[in-house]
Length: 335
Image (cartoon, rainbow, N blue to C red; front, side):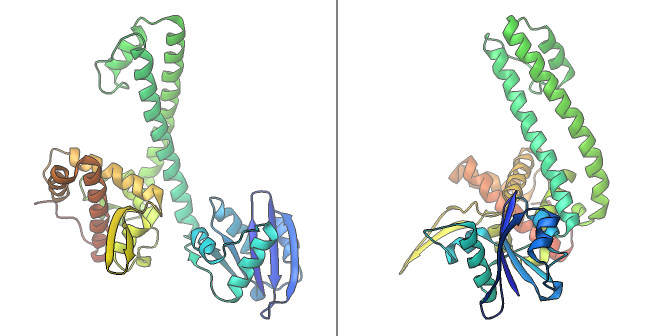
């Protein structure tokens, strides 16, 4: 029994067929335990192979389906569109196409990591989101005081001296009100980030490979765990190039006849992995220590410019990470 499921936050449209393609059930139910139970009633769990498209809520959808389906497959949304593009799209048509592709064994499958990795990802992505939000508030503070031609002498506006200056700098009533409120929001973020960092420090002991990654200059505990969480099962990637492609750091390729052209990076894949590698690269090249990745960056910067050098160094860092995990060894930092 094959089930193609078009899943949304409120409803699920399911098309269930037998191996010959005969429809057994086409039904729309609510996205809940009761709704899924209603959809698969009278079908034995071992009989059912189900497929749904990957989305941001996929862990919840998979959790709903697994008690009723012997096999649950998550389809890669971009590749599914390439196979089953249609001018007319409805929930019923989408579920029917998914069902037929599953019967024909034509589903481009998307990897579903373990629940432990999913929870680690959510923790680290939450921390990264708060960090990015804090950076925006820091910029906001600088913009507020610049309205009246003032500039904070402290590079880090969260430092004690900078905070004392911000509290006493003369501003008009509206700017003072906006500044005080923005600073209070930033303080709340700092408290939450500190609490999250304590939790993250405890998590690192579950993942000994984090120590291997931290041997690379620029990679912290948080960075190492986020890289591990985003990669998940390292054995999925047979070569460093495949891992780079997953991170969206592989160059796009255009080929026609004898012409071959490599363009910008694809940016298709894990945006979080690509983001943290870029952050680690920035931290690594700013280090006062001399190391291989920094030397690589400086050579490329002179030829290609800063931005291209950062991207290329991020990709090289990911290649290094692949080899460290493959060989289970620490990084040799000397040139």
